[in-house]
Image (cartoon, rainbow, N blue to C red; front, side):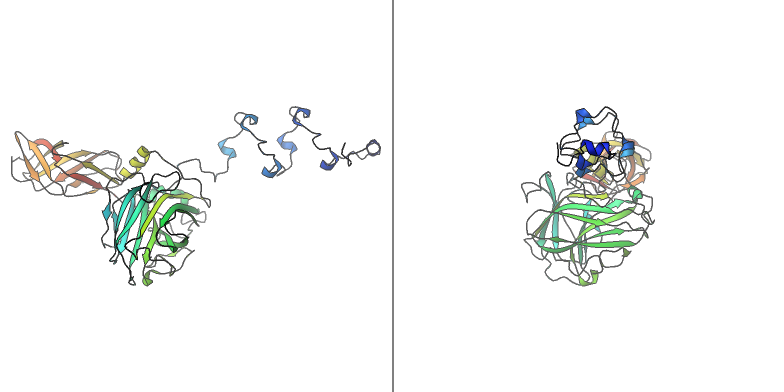
Length: 426
């Protein structure tokens, strides 16, 4: 018996209080405790903690069926579908690689949902999906978004800006409760590999509330995959409308002139400043490459493991904003009718309903009626769009040559050796 155990004399004298130090080591075992002897009401508040439990003390077999319920789990625990970013693992690439121009507006190309935004810049970069054979990937990821510098911008003018970014639809962000005292923090995590080390900036911009917050992070080693985690507190002042417009602009700055420099780490009114004066110029050399993957934005102040989604689910999410059909020579045809003698009203089946009425590119189109066809090279326009509808009504103008048609003349139309691009991006 332990040397500090109660003796008979002490017990006879009325000292009947037992403490942990009075009990011999290993004297109390599970088989010596009567069933039901230990109940929740008999335990002091906070008396059972993780450090008080032995390793592997709690196992699945020891937990009663139904003992763990949703109501008993903290509301901060995310149980799936937590990533607010679409295509964060860079799985979907409908458009293929592209080279940006200087437009001062979002340019989509390369992996879906992400875009490049270049303002008064002279540099040229290509954006494309890269497999693990090009630049490698972090463990658990097969693809990356690769930004390859073609024409360097070694002398940055004051107004220049280059970002890699994604817009998130406003109605998907209502649970953040921006514009209220309950506004929630979000945490961004991502993998980056860059030829250029130093301080980079990321900003979160609320278009509806005209608010922005800039954060800094550091690339420590050149051409090395590094995981970055950034937490941004909720904004109690700027609301996000409950609609299908732009909610949050999530943007990684690659280069910024002096007129684009401003403060960090606090929400403020959006101006022309999207970075700090510490921002590196990541496109100052034609040999530079920047890679991103594993991009996740989630509610709370903790970065959880990346939420991998199936290819099919990610593709469907991307097609809400952009979808295309690649057509050979008369490979696909769709119902249509003459609208006057030079235009055709037609229908097109959508993969998923679109976010908004789309724009389309100029393509070569044929309209078949009776024993012949006539052709057009005009861009179709949407003339019948309904949210939630999987069919799009469109009109194609400027048909000429070949077999003429009259108003309401029934036939079929189809792209010819063309890719019809249907764009409803934010």
